[in-house]
Length: 112
Length: 111
Image (cartoon, rainbow over the protein chains, first blue to last red):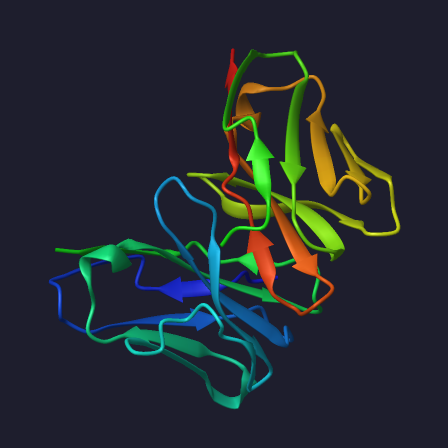
């Protein structure tokens, strides 16, 4: 079974630039999550989708972050404009139900 | 804010010893999960324990849950160098679906 795919794996941008991350969940997984993990900390949930709909986005900085999940499959997370404090690893995960989550390898973002 | 708080923050043991990590949380939960993260395999689910369960085993892993104290522990028996990783607890609260991770325990197993 193929795992959660994410791209790119690494991204370096300057502050105030825009960046987008892509995630392809495990086939059949209705729930998709985006997390932000700052070095030395645990993952922080940014947004959770159930099929196409948003279940929780309470910790998503909506003035600069946006996410969508087209047709209940792939998802993109965008940051516009980026700030220095956005430097982190962005993890995508999917699950069949609200239980075990399967994580992708993550995208390491560096904002200069 | 992070719901789960792991203790200790870091742990260094010899191969073959047991490692115990603790997690405390603040609000009522549906279930609690433990994950492992290392550079080689990323973040991997280890075990899930539901709020009506008190103990669960999986191979060399033993998890306990005390909902009255809002705490859980993860025991790794006969540790191996390959167990070197960060371990996180994650909770799914009864008030919603949001999964909240703790800050993690960094385990180092010396060969």
